[in-house]
Image (cartoon, rainbow, N blue to C red; front, side, top):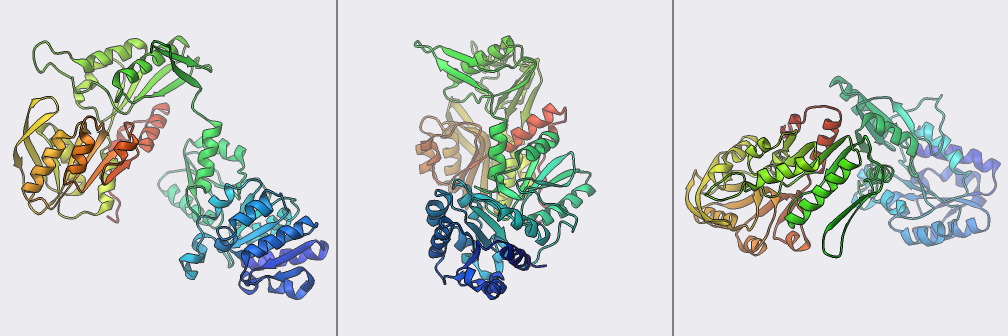
Length: 558
C-alpha cells in the first residue's frame, strides 16, 4: 500500500471518531492523496492554494481554538519555505499542529532539485518543542499516525507518497518514541530512519557474507531519539553507522553523535596556570583502575604543551589509573634524533625519558620524523601512518600524469609508498642543508617535465625547503605542483612563502592546531585524522592489531 493511501485511510477513521481533526493542503491534495478526505469531510478540509505560510498560520489558529489540524505539502515547502511560521506560530506557541512533509530527500528525485529536501530534519531539529517522525513503511505509518494525532504537541512527519519496500509485517506493534531493533548483532550498530531502513537491511545481509554481525536499529523518531536503545547497542558493538535520507549535518548522524558525546563526554579536567606561569592540573573525577587516553599534540608552543602533558601524566599516575595511554599526533623535538655534530643533544630521546618517567604506559604517534625514535622507548609505542588518508584524497581527485616527489633522500620511502598507491613514478630532490631550516636544491632525479607533481613530506615547518622545491619543479617544466604532509607546523615565514609559491594545492592533516591565519593559506585542504586515531583506540582497548589501519585499499571503481 502507498504511504499516502495508508495515511488517508487512517485519518478517515480517526476523523469519524474525532470532529476536531481537520486537514489543510497547499494545492497538493491530489498528489498527497487527501482528496478522499475532502469528499468525506468537506467542512473540515481546506485547500489554501500555493500559500504554505498562510497554511501554517491557519493551522496555528485552528489549534488555538481547540482543533487538531494536520497540514500537507511537499517536504521543502513544509520546512524551508515556512520555517519562521513553524518556529514562531507553532513551536514557540506550543500549538497542536501536525505537519506532513511528503517525498523528503531522494524520494522527490523526479521532481527536480527545488523539490528535494535534504535539510528538513536539520531545520526542524533546531526548533524547540518539535517532534520529528520518519515513516518506514505503510504498516508502521498507520499505527504511528494514530499515536501522533493523540499528542498535544507539534509533530513533523516525513512521508514518501508512494509505496516503499516493506519492513514490518501485520503483527508489528509500533510504540512512539521507541526504536525498533530489526536485527541483533555484535560487531557494529547501524541506525537508520524512514525508507533507508529497508536499504540498511540489505547492507546487513551483505555484511553477514563478510563475517560482520551488524545490529540494525530503526530510530523511527529522530527527535527525540530513543537514547536507551541506541546507547545500549553502541556500548555493545563499540561501532556505529547512520543511514539516512537527508543531510548528515543536523540530521540523524548529528543527533546520534551529539547523544554519544553528551552521555560519554571527555572526562572533567582543568588545566590552569599559577600567577608565575606554572601549570596546575586538576582531575575532577575518579580514574582509579581506569584505562585513560590523553590527547596532546606537542607542537607550538612545544615547551608549554610538553609540561602540561607531563604534569597530567603524573596526576593520573598518582590517582591510580591502570593505564595511561598518550595520543600524541605530533611528537615535538623529533628532529633532534641523533648527534649530527659534536656537543649536540638527542632531544627526542630526552622527551621519551621524561614521558616514561612521568608514568606513561603507551604512546600513539603519527608519522614520527625518524623511525628510530621508537627505539627510545621501553613502553609500547604505535607509529600511525597518515599515508592512507592522503592517498585516499588524491585517488579521489583523479589527477592524471602524476609524479610523486620526495623532497630529500630521507623521504624516498614515504614517496615510494604513495607512488605505489597512485600507480605513478617518483622523483627525488637532491638537496643539501647548510644550516637548520635552510635548504639548497642540487639536482632533480627523475622525469617531471609536463607532469603533475605531488610532493610528500612528514612535516612543513618554515616552508623554506618546500618553496624552493616547488620553484625548482616549475622551472624544470612541471605542469602543476601539489604538496602534502602530515604535520603542518607552518612557523616563521611559512604562510608568506606558501602564498607566494606556484603551488596548486597544499594538503595537510589536523595533527597540529591550525590558526585562522594558517587556514587562510591559498588552496589549503585539511584532512582529519580523527577516524584513524579513534579506530586505533578501539583496537588497543580490544587487544586487536593496529597495523591493518595503515593499509590503503583503493576502491574498485577507481
